[in-house]
Amino acid sequence: MTDFLQRFESHLRAALGDPRHAEREPAVLLEASNHLATAGSAKRMRPLLVNHFGAAVDLHPLYRLCIATAAELIHTASLLHDDVIDEGTERRGRPTANARWNNSVAVLSGDLVLCIALEQLYELPRTVTTTAIELVAEMTRSAMLEVQARRARRWDLDDWHAIARGKTGALLAWCGRAPALAKNESDLARSFADCGHHLGLAFQITDDLIDVMSTDTGKNRFADLRQANPSFLIAAARQRDDQLCRDIDAWWDGDGEADELHRLARAVASSEAPRVAVNAVDDHLAAALDALGEFANHPNGRQIVGWVEQLRSIAHGALTSALPKRSHA
Ligand code: FPP
Ligand code: MG
Image (cartoon, rainbow, N blue to C red; front, side, top):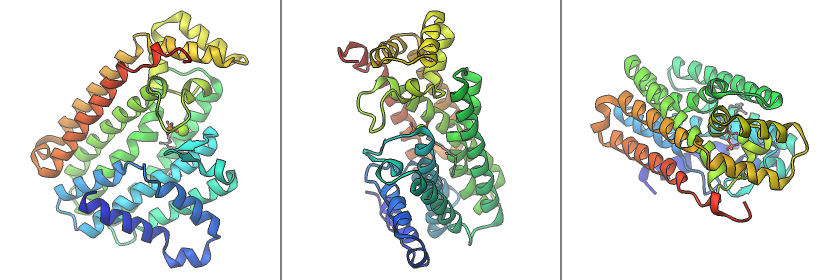
């Protein structure tokens, strides 16, 4: 584990175990918050991104930790709520808080985690806090758009884009924007936010790809197809294949059989959509590198370039997934 990540893990645990909360809050809320926030399989992508951008503007290490913790906890709060909305049962290889406890515990611990996240920003310039509040509002609006799209069971790539920008792109954009704003570097704040936004969209498309293509997601497999959840891959498959679109609509409109779900997943996986999704990942990653500009040569910038390569290889690797050949799938 890198030096930054070690300091981050203790800062995060200290924030969640702060006696101001430990003495006041019902124990179960902190237990549920820790259950998700400290799960070993959390990737800590957002804190690392904050650290890399923070290093580029020479932001004080303590402020980097505070922004990184705020970003990770905003993410945690959103997942606690998202799993209630999605009725998810598994996350980061563990039962979700709603499954392990109940919806009330999951929602209220999400609220508490969000407050702890914003507390991290008290010492930072006002623009960092105001952009964090705007971010949470944007994420909330997108989550509602997603719920509405899922209920309507009809959405296309434009809807997907509007949702993904706010749901995933906005937080990664803030991970670039906030450290630069903390140093009053408004031009860099725009470029870093742009880089984060494109990384976020590439990441979301890859997540959508993995939901159908991978056998080991640590989450509920085929959740997007099962729940009519806006997904880049499914939107691209529906746009390109009218018969598949009708079959998916029929499954969403009726009482779908599990066998049919697997057949539809196989049809999506073997359509042109995965290739379209991988091309879109490549385009967003190229735009992320463009926005990174000269910072790509900075030691921390090189780490981001390394992620770009990793994400590209995960997306391309999903194309050769075993799913279409699996007999039970
Ligand atoms: C997971 O995406 C969910 C999100 C990235 C954001 C959810 C946002 C909210 C619930 C709004 C409330 C926000 C806050 C900060 C309290 P996904 O459902 O595509 O991925 P999954 O497969 O991991 O569930
Ligand atoms: Mg979800």
